[in-house]
Amino acid sequence: MTLFFTIATTNYLPFAVSLIDSVKQQHPEFEVCICLTDYLTPDAIAKNKLMRKYPILQLHELQAEEFGFITQNYNPMQLANSSKILFARHFLDKKEIDQVIFGDSDMLFFGRLPENVINEHEIILTPHFSSPPPVEMKRQELEVLNAGLYNGGFFKLKKSAQVDAFINWHRERSVLDCIYDFKRGYYGEQLWLNFVPLYFKNAHVEQNTGLNVAYWNLHERTISQKEGIFMVNGTTPLSFFHFSGWDYNHPLNISKWTLFTPEMRPDVKPLLEEYHKVLKANEYEHYIKMPNYYTANNQSQKKSFFKKLKKKLFKK
Image 1 (cartoon, one colour):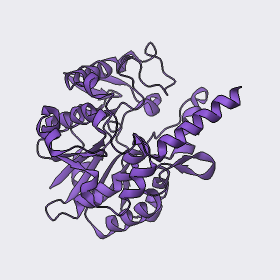
Image 2 (cartoon, helix red, strand yellow):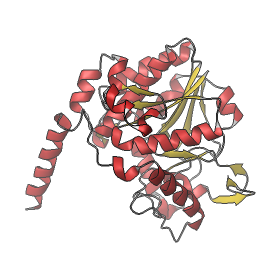
Image 3 (cartoon, one colour):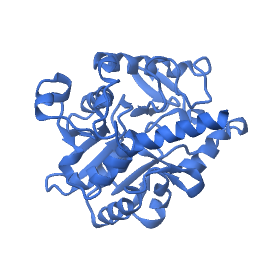
């Protein structure tokens, strides 16, 4: 059995449901799960139609030894990123699950995954990009040198001894140190992935251009439509787009981090419009301001307060 999972807080539930809707449309054979780095009572779930649409697994249900630390110290992004490997471990421990595929909640599928991604390889990662941007866009390369060669927003793990070793290695390094500090060599859980092809010989770097299309690789990928199917560079079907840095209130802007303006990339507009439409249908505006049970009053908020105070005093 293949299980596809994503991770979300309650306010990001419309993103997660939209993603899983698209996954099930393209891959009805996959089992799916929304992993919640938040807390909801059974009564709250029972009364909420969106929460009942797909199976939900909550962080506390894993009974992970790291639970206390990560819920007391991390902000929502750190909590989600640190728990990816914990949820993967939980699923692969189940006899009926042969492999897991993870996708960040801010993705949408427009086509099927390539068959080799589904059926082959024990560990699959995708690079941020595979060809150099023009020199005037070298900022993209500098960002990847800081943040990692591979995007942590998508991976596949197939049950094996090597995957067990990978999970143990990654868990020891990333769960309790899921911090963002370029000077010390930390970028959440993602920077560790640079070592994976070196340490784990069966790891596969999938360079199919239809996977994980996002602002960071648009210099090498253009979008078009052929007989109703989205294509990348006119030759490869688009599997999924990663809407990292996209803003619901400015839907035609590709990302807050991109160097491309909407006028420069009209080819991406149909994807942006579709994403806005499905999020609206899944009640984005109702959910987005909901607080996170764990992070609303934990240590991450205190750190955030002092950071803001320091910035304010420094300006003065």
